[in-house]
Amino acid sequence: MNRYVITLFVLILVTAVTAQAKKPEPPPPPEDGFAGTWIAPDEADIPNTPAGDMIRYGKLLLTETYKYLGAESAMPITGNKLACTNCHLDDGTAAYGGPWSVVSLKYADPGIFSSRTNEYRNVPVRINGCMQRSMNSIDSRQLPENSYEMQSIIAYFDWLVTGMQVDDWRLVEGTGFVKALPDMDRAADPVRGRQLYEKQCLPCHGNNGEGVWNPDTQAFIFPALWGPDTFNNGAGMYRLRTGVRFVKGNMPYGRADATNPESLLSDEDAWDVMSYVISEERPVFVNHESDWSGVGPDDVPNWMKKRVDAGYAIYFPRSDYMDYIAACSTAEPDTSYPQVFTAAQHKYGPWADMLQLQKDIRAAYQAKCLPAP
Ligand code: HEC
Ligand code: HEC
Image (cartoon, rainbow, N blue to C red; front, side, top):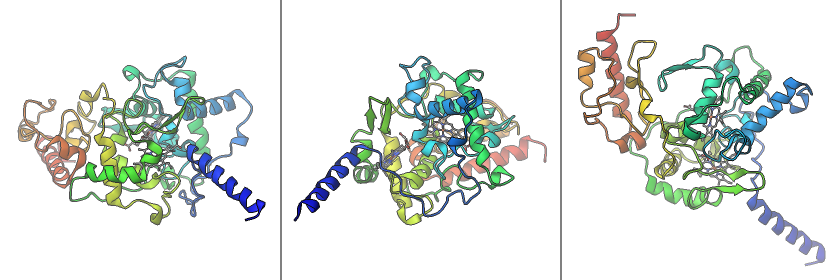
């Protein structure tokens, strides 16, 4: 080997070693997941005005959340060490990576009704939902709506929406995550999931799901998946049917490309590996007892709409469900009655029987207790 070849060898080796500690660049997507319906606006075009400053500051809050809003910051709100963009990838501009491309329009006032919290969610309410759950905020704190910080995040979202290339936000592709995976007819298996985890995820997220923290930037290189520094059990990511869609389309990071099915985990592997992640210990959402309480604007009790895979608190349905229909009762679930399905089945599936029963209960309640539409 001549000197040149050896130098090249060493160079490649050094690059390989340093690359391990750095986040790999995702491969260039072969296809545009937004299919031209939305194009990320160019940051160079953000004006040097106070309004432009807000957009830039909003982005910083979302990408360096711990530094600006973490427990040790001047404005302590978030209770874990995640950044919003650990789940909303590429600064909220990744197709099928939970992009914020159209949230300003989707949650325009009065917002979208949520049976989980029995309220209409406009943009700031939606942001605070992730604050309290995904970011496990301290004592369930919220970012005040009139704060410069909240207004800056909203300004960043408003700026993102200027990338829309179609008339109606509903036509924008690549929003949310990949489409729902078909439910399996068995329970997801955390034991098999652990084996997959060790091969596919552990090199970045760690043996104990602790991730890799960079003390200089006060941010994760690889975020924590369980333990104290990540999302709590009230978060969307904790619901298996939601979390699996994130993992399917985006993990392993750098390899998965939502527009290329061959780069993705099989459905079965995605279910099992994510079931392992949520089987480990994590923060408990302080207000989880009140989720799905109250009665929605359609006069149906919210507990009848509880997500089947929300794995905590007042599981739906309980053995006395017929009494609610018979009495047209809007009372909260009576937890002295046993659940029809076990907590484990709610968490890991299979869900077909649950979904059917839930549908039947709602239909029976509507038929007996509400005027015909
Ligand atoms: C642990 C992962 C995670 C983190 C961290 C996170 N989110 Fe989310 N976020 C989600 C998931 C999952 C959803 C979708 C929930 C669902 O479908 O039920 C979501 C949805 C949203 C939406 C609505 C998007 C849409 O298209 O409807 C907004 C806005 C949002 N998050 C903002 C934030 C902000 C702001 C932060 C930081 C303060 C944040 N999120 C942190 C996981 C996360
Ligand atoms: C090559 C490194 C790498 C591998 C391998 C990897 N991830 Fe990730 N993961 C990341 C990075 C980086 C992020 C955050 C992305 C960002 O901040 O832009 C992330 C984010 C996540 C998140 C959301 C944030 C959080 O903390 O909850 C989940 C869940 C997740 N990964 C699960 C998995 C699972 C399950 C696997 C295995 C199938 C996996 N990842 C494999 C690097 C990796």
